[in-house]
Length: 320
Image (cartoon, rainbow, N blue to C red; front, side, top):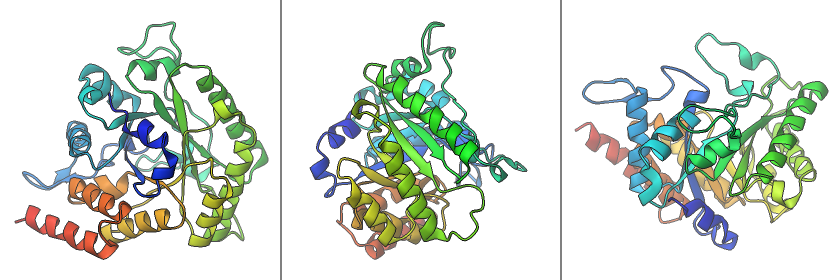
């Protein structure tokens, strides 16, 4: 079973030299039919679920990523039915919730309102659990021992109280479940914050995370945290504050390959020890080559420019 993420987290002093990289292959909790990127062969078309599952297999087999984050539905296919991760060291991870901030169907307006908690791993999921199992035990039966919980705070007393209360209850439940842990994703506010620029929102989130960690006992804490990189100054201050926290960055919206590689560099240059990229990988023309380029940047075996040049060559080769 894929234990690489656990092995790497067990030696935090080595993460600076070889940061963790997780493929966030869970877009279906957010988008829909056109949310999985594109395939170029035999002709250009929107990637379907079967093709996306194959991308997950291929990316994990290549080994540049340390973990693959999936929906519970995809984890059931790959980790339980196929036992795909049994014979590789890449770690399967599952998303435990899908707060309304990430609901993003075509024509949807959910993200106009403060985020509301929404649990996606339910107590009795067909094909994985017996009726008396908890949602956390479902994930464990999928051969998965680590899952993601996402949280969005919006400077709104009632909405943030509800979100934090739900998260604290979740963290306590996971702590009571043997052989299972979680990691925490914290987004920037999803509703407008008058007077707050990108730096201020980064500071708000950093302070909110450190405050939330103060509410948790050691066995309730996340294995690591991912959030948005805003500025180098905010990021370094946050990463330096508590050396017991493993801090990493989400990829966010893809701009271009060069920007994604620069983000991976900056995150780890200023104190972060991991990245969890989704759109920055599966929306690329050559996702597998992008994983290779990101790994080279993270390990400092290539500069951003060198990795980008190699990636662009792979795209040219792919198109003949």
